[in-house]
Amino acid sequence: MSDSWRSILERWSNAGLVDAATAVRIRAFEASHEEPRQFRWPILIAIGFGALMLGAGVLLFVSAHWDELSPTGRFSVVLLLVTAFHVVGAVVSQRFSAFAIAMHGVGTEALGAGIFLSGQIFNLQEHWPGGIMLWALGAWLGWWLLRDWVQAGLVAILTPAWLASEWIEATHHFPMADTVVAQGLFLLSITYFTALATNNRETVRRALGWIGGIALIPTAIVAVESRIDQYWGTGDLRLPIHLGVFGYGLGLILPLLLAFWLRGKAFWMNGVAAIWIVTINLIPRGSSVLPYAWYAVASLALIAWGVKELRRERINLGIVGFGLTILGFYFSNVMDKLGRSASLIGLGLLFLVMGWALERTRRKLVARVKGVAA
Image 1 (spheres, rainbow, N blue to C red):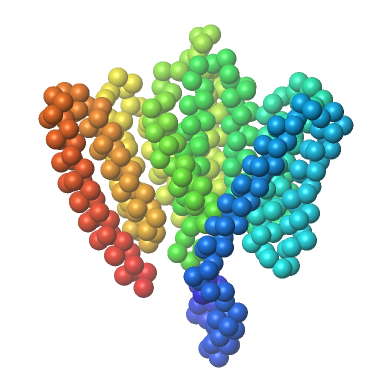
Image 2: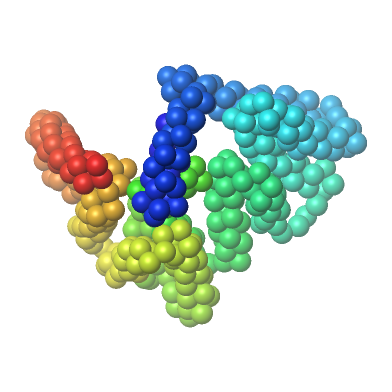
């Protein structure tokens, strides 16, 4: 049975909103209408890959014949791409909801291609982030109408993509202004990743958790390696202080506001992550050790966060981050100081010992979380 409705039913039962007999009848009804779990994931995987391949195949077919089409034909194809998938999704929505969600998702993805292809058809020389803004607005409209996790995931990706593109376009003549974006996206990844809670596992939050988990380690690396301490100033090639404070402030405030909306009072832990990001800029640029110390602190903090809030995925990702930190430090600061054979022996021993120790620690922490949650 679905963990989400079971947790809600249990919460209602504990609050006295549902009596024991009604709760038993609800569980029996859901169990009788439950789809076999052994078939659910293969079906979802098949639908996901099928939708992806369908969208890619259609776009490839259009691009192969693009030069042969007239402007009218091109625009007709663009309209067909944007509308056809949504129409199919609407037709099958009552019969096969998963397939309908996939079709609507492909339709919203095709909207982005349609926006930029329309600009190419009519030779529009406009502000290019405006195209991403229109795409994000289309995703917001799709989420408002459909309320499914695919549209919410597209909103979560396209909205910060639009804000980041506006910043990059406004500061493209200033070196390294994109580091402000990197650190803001890292904090946003943390907000997405920590959206899941033990008592709230909605599909939208799961989508946010996956997006944040995938982006967390890459954005952490970029955030530390591109710190901005030496790029603010008053020179012609330096990012003006007022512009840097504005962009950096929004990069911190907006993810924290979203964290407050998703997590309530528990968002203070996201505030601790924001402090970690701010202190990144205090690391001297010539230091070869402190960046890895910052990575280790972040990984250990993520593990502790997972233990505190009983979230196994945070423990697992924190363990992975800590292992990557040790490997990165070995490759950049230790391996080049040893001979070829000694460095390979050390690397092998490091893999064996670290793999054993980290996996043992991970299992203990996960077992502890499971025991408390039970």
